[in-house]
Image (cartoon, rainbow, N blue to C red):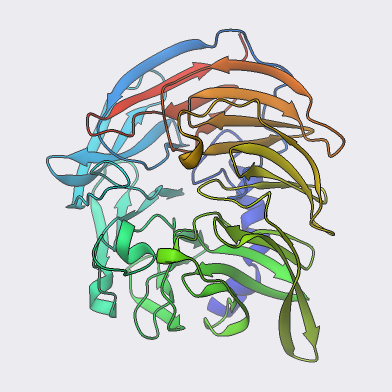
Length: 423
């Protein structure tokens, strides 16, 4: 049963997108890649002023809101603990709240959770900043099981010395839930990646000695092999879904292991990078039963920092440096166009979230500005622009024309806002 579930990984993700067209149950949507499901309501323009349906105060935290089964789930600081909160999608009224692990604070942001929860059927999976995993009942908020990564050998250090990766600034790499299993980048000897049983939290398998960065595991099929593409502190690694063994590796080294941007895959190519190594095109090849990988191009202009790019056809759309929208040809690595018209309060810490809507892309800048533009490699063509919230570093959730955004990156917290983009 376990082997069959693993082999059907890609199919399971595709079915989830079809079955939950009205929901946005995890980071970057049903398929974790920023794509609006085919049956979702795509936008062709934006209102000059979006209609606010409701707004509620949110406490400290950088986790993105998610939506499932009539509820909006928010992860925030309550009483010094990272707390998961369920709100009504209709008016933002609170349904339940459950406090989990103690909050974490550093110089990068407020005291509060930084990892987006995952809603799958009747369960919520929440990963706290200090390295704990919690499974809750989605209807009641009751904790079903939880595990401390320290028991698996991970030692959380915080902002001390030169310790790199998630152990320094907190766990942000949202878990991956597929079938009966939950996959997470943990760290510690032999626990770089761990497969948990979703029913009880027990370890099914674990592998690799690498330390987690800040990007989540990305499921993909490349060179005929089903795998996870993981961006560890040590570099980009292809991981066998069956047992956690290494299939290929491309070393990448940056100060403090600040690998944030999630890798993007297309056919047998992986697009990945960071603020010091630029955007890189990695080709995965097969020789018999063995896989290999090599860097075929580098693009310094398109280097990502804390923004996750998206793929449309054979092109990558993301945020390059300094704070420019870029379109890159995945085959060659050449920049097709760049545009600097988006507003960012701080260009050095600029962030944008992207949602692909058919032939268009909706972006939310860290300045709270929405911009809709064509997903065209020919040129930047803006279709609409409007302000919807304050300063933010969160991915929005999008359901049937309604956008759920969270702002506030300071200690006072901010707001969770539901806006209608169809009026």
